[in-house]
Image (cartoon, rainbow, N blue to C red; front, side, top):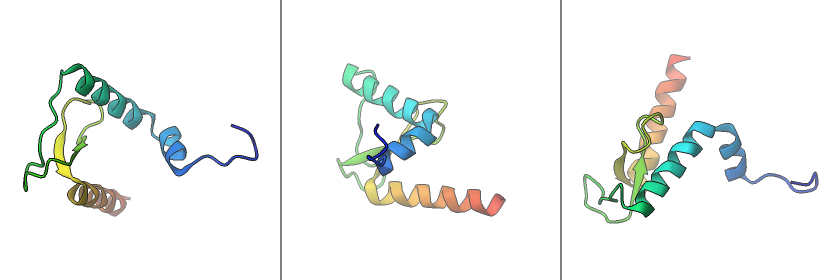
Length: 85
């Protein structure tokens, strides 16, 4: 990356979170290979569900959440983390 080009927000996140990046990549590979089945959102049944990793050390263990609830889950985790510090 040249000095004139600033890294994107996604690239900054990726560089700062190698374990999370690895878990996402491992899950994508498992989905492509048919080792993991994408499921609908566990509450409302929306087919457009995101995989949420409660534990990045276990990349195949995911909860399927709609985008709204996935973002909400990360907000709650961030707030809990900030409360502990």
